[in-house]
Image (tube, rainbow over the protein chains, first blue to last red):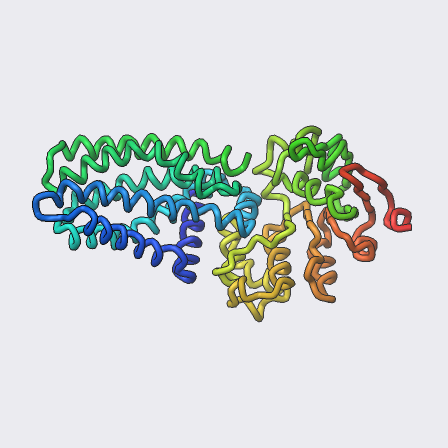
Length: 220
Length: 214
């Protein structure tokens, strides 16, 4: 109960701060739309190749938007010395981590709400419920991993460089399974159900592992 | 009975010793001032006492609990004002306190009382970023006592406070064991019964306030 109260309080605080400052989401939304526009021109999209190229472009935009969103999650706390203030309350580090990951994940979902319609518009692909579900599932695991590494590198000067180096290799399972699910949802080849189950397995695995590691990363 | 017993506390940053075999004994209800020039190790010592960092070596017992093993439990009984206020700039003064109430499991109804204690009732709805540095410090002090801690650790709490600042410190330190770091000897003399002087990470002198100041 206390775990949930702390996690929700932290997520609410982060979302409220973002709503008031609008530092992250507008910039991220512009970034993902620009990425799609550039890809649209660069790949010479037509009705034959759109469904083959769109999943790759979607995941590229999502991965880089995620790196920015998760990187900011702990950098601001360290800069303001507020992470220590939170830890000094005696709150569980895993609950603090869960709240931060929840907020960062929700901010990425807001960007996805811009990204997916833009993808449908620019690439002429059908944004189905299956596609949205696969992206949301991948976001959960990516948020957990991204926030853990963001917390690890937040104190380092080279954090902008280190975060992608640490995070991207571990995001590959989400990109592979997510890419397969999205391609299948867009009418391409591949088993949608199998890819979604794989995403779910990865989510459970990484949410559990990152929650266990959070204490050592945040407090020790 | 002792509130805090530190034995041979040492801490290194790389190969540089920040603290070197510091012993400290604080009785319940005592107010102890830690004095020393910049880089003497005051902040490192206070961060260890507040359980924010672990010492490289040594023993620390707070309220009868091993502070190195029972950190989370102790944090519920310690109030800590760090060197920087550690507030959320986009949240108002009241929202900052309410947020930390949620994290501590404390009653949000204490927020107006704490704002009143810190003399911040008038600016309760102002964002922390709009408050002066002194007001931010007052808010940080109010946050440190909102859960009624038994032990108060204050790292230069007088920084940026106005002339009425020491009165606030007197109010929050009343009936609480306090360890306070400051550069201000006059403040140390006024607020604390005992003084410990650190120099280059070692205890250079300790005793009653009058003797050390002399």
